[in-house]
Length: 106
Ligand code: FES
Image (cartoon, rainbow, N blue to C red; front, side, top):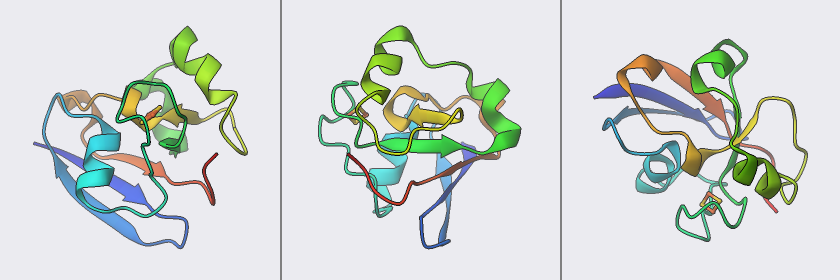
């Protein structure tokens, strides 16, 4: 299990024991984190799972793929730390990862 923290827009912290191999989006949905709609179910086809990776974790989570980059064009208020949470897979290397939910989704 890997420790994952998802901070909702209102500041509520969701501290989650995430299974390795699961995605940040799956953990958000399972824990009813508000603001992660994940309409496409993780197919990188909706951008409603948009999150901001905490500044200290951007190197560990890596860059979005070209397909994810294209989809992020449909997200609202995209920043350099923006990612689609269905494309971030939990591994032991991400233990302690923090992501933030934007104010609203596409
Ligand atoms: S759930 Fe649709 S792009 Fe992530």
